[in-house]
Amino acid sequence: MADSTLDLLDRAEVFAGLTSATRLAISAVAERRVIPAGDLVFREGEPSDYVFVVARGVVEATKRSDQGADVPLRLLGVGDVGGLTSVALEQGRSATLRARVESVLVTVARQDFLVLLGSHAELGRAILAHLGAKVRAKNQRIATLEAAALPDGRIGIAFFDAKPYDRQSFDARVPAGMRLHYLEARLGPTTAALAHGFRVVCAFVGDDLGAPVLERLSLAGVELIAMRCAGYNNVDLDAAARLGLSVTRVPAYSPHAVAEHAVALILALDRKVHRAHGRVREGNFSLAGLVGFDLHGRTAGLVGLGRIGQCLARILRGFGMTVLAHDAFARPETAVELGVSLVELDELLVRSHVVSLHAPLTPATHHLVDAERIERMRPGVVLINTSRGGLIDSTALVRGLKTGHIGAAGLDVYEEESEYFFQDRSDRVITDDLLARLMTFNNVIITSHQGFLTEEALANIAETTLGNIAEYLAGKRRSDLTNAVVPGG
Image (cartoon, rainbow, N blue to C red; front, side, top):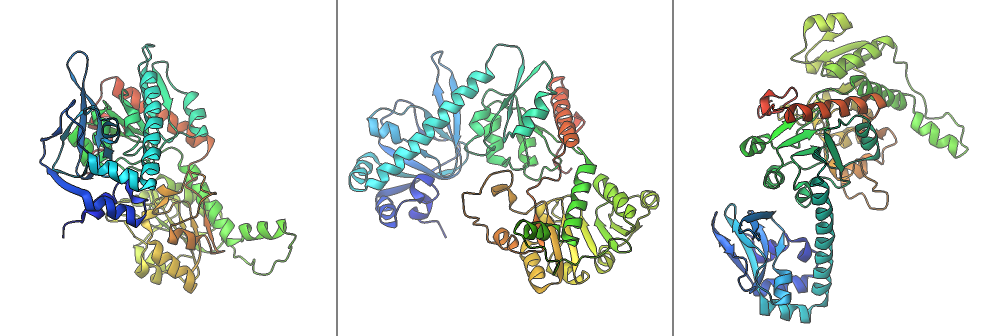
């Protein structure tokens, strides 16, 4: 069933927050226009007879330069609004718009829009806030473009979601021929324009690199996506290949860092360190409820025996634990060298007191730990995940914790972490019900994807990322790059 005009309007942030009465009033005078792929929406200089919201598809905006060339400005996607300033000032269109794919616009005629402004004060306030945000964004874009155009001969790199520790490690290693432009904003549909003028974008796990964002980056002149992490499940590799974008990653930065963080979670949960610390700070020195167990003599199961799994196996063997591992690609001689037994996943789950996940996130491993596999685990098992949040079905995990079948869980990753991790959200309500529920259990420790955060790992990330960029600038492309990521692996 086709969406209603009201549904389509709700996709625009500027309108979605209005009262139902105002939204209905807008909907009553709005019209839906279908623009075939390649067709003009309007030309620069034409009369501004309506405002519009992109309800479906992608629309490209271009402007004629003083030299007569059509210069790409930006791509408008679902929820983007256009025509507000032109209508308000009774001026001609400031740019030419053309549909990149078949697109649906919801339009409101100029006269109707002006009447709505006069009768619904909140609409005027919402538009002022929207235009103010656009001005701030354009100021940032101007600053970014000026930084990208500095005539110092160095290659500019747009570095998104930059944190203080990133700056420190990268600034200490950046070659003379590169210049890093740090941006606190995460990469996404509304911030992709900040990459205009840069050939290289450096991105992280929380950035959005889906097809719409990659299209905007390509239009902005970006050629290389340099991921400063091992994971790349947030990158649409098929879209990158179609657009001719190269993608690189850091396949291994410090397996010791992640393995040691997994051990920290195991020990803290087993010996109730987090609970004891909280009690003592409140003057409660009781030991009741803090009984743990010896790791020595117990069994640990590692799902994945790559670099991190191997490091963890050595550490846990040092505790005197029996270590099982499940990995379809592990070499038997590696297991023998580590003193590890390779077993099927079901056997590992049944026998292990501690289960630690170190597998990549793929369609085959998504929700690898679900309700059925939790039921197969030993009652009271300690479950650790320092790999990818999507390996665990969070709903099933909550259920397992409530029944007591899972004795404790240590999570450095979470399936929907991009909305929360790496940010200070202390002044806002946690609206993710599953995350909020997990945070209530006293036998759960959640850390915000900090397993990689050591001096050594940060140094390796910077060196490898900058090395990937240097390879690209030296002429290598796509699959020829040492750490390239291409469709199909």
